[in-house]
Length: 115
Length: 110
Image (cartoon, rainbow over all chains, first blue to last red; front, side, top):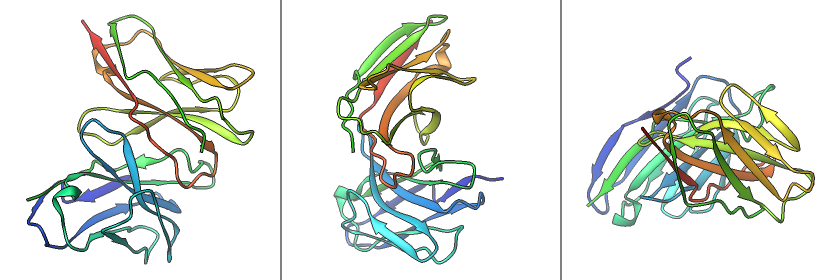
């Protein structure tokens, strides 16, 4: 199993540009989520999904869109990038018949800089 | 969600035991206590989860007193590679919105 994969690892955008951060998992997990982590801070939940076709907002959803067309993929779209979105973005997945939602598996992260 | 309080940082030396206490005075009956570890430039990694008394795995032990208003993560005989940020999370086992605070930065020195 590759676990949770994220692409790209690094990205630099100009203000106003849009882009999609990719996230995929091969563990057949129902739950997937996106977090952002700013320097010296904990993780803040952006959006999450409890299954294909079902998404909901987290703590800081403004400026981001998500969709979940398959169990495996959960892309995060930045609609119009702003310098305040400079951060490290982590995707996570969890829950199968033998695991709880609380035991999340995280990807390696995408480091995004918006100029 | 129950609010948690944990120390901002802790220093230790190789071979020592590190104990990190997390306070969660408003913990609810159906809340579990979960700990994560995060190394620099990596995503967090699940360490351990418990509800009451003591839980032990190959990485750590989790001690939870009867009133469950606090919990202590114990890392036995730490090494330099245990330098990381440790997060305490409290919420139901089926919580979709786990909240990560600032965590405790543990620095292990030679």
